[in-house]
Image 1 (spheres, rainbow, N blue to C red):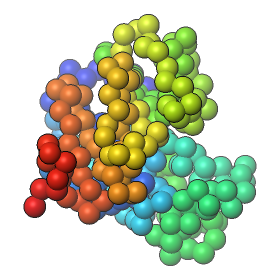
Image 2: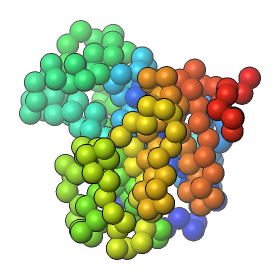
Image 3: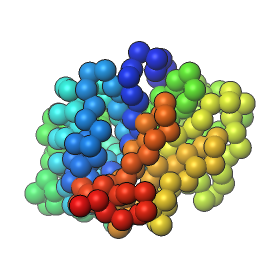
Length: 232
């Protein structure tokens, strides 16, 4: 999907949420996006954290109050694969899916999603391209045009396997997927990773793309200040 950002006052990119509803609530309460803004979430809304259902509910609410676009992460893809019968449930459950089932009060990975949540998963984007940015979940191929990137690479390749060189377009790539377990955003100039390990004790990170301003929130919804401490 291609978008022009100039019509939006602010454009926010949010990293991997992984069931951390309280972190998402705290973040949204702080930035307060409205109809003049755009919020892009980078995927991995579900699994590992304790409230995957609540995260999807909150993002569906957000879509009615601001301009929101969601990118599909590998965890959403795994769940869809399970529901479609293309993958057995156990690998997904072992990879964090058990927490998602629990958030829905379900015991089996079958017919447990509300219809609106299934539509949410199906309608997620592979990527978003703008004048200056390319946003996706995981990684990219610098040798290919952004319109021809393979879904497998966009969804699954970790940056610790190989950090790609800058894309010849000169656009900055914004991703999640590769967790920074120290809670710090990886910013190499040509690529920025906003997965800062919220569910594991790090932070949920949001970057305003036009200004490059960055804010982070704990899984309890508390804002981090510039010295790394929680703001009371």
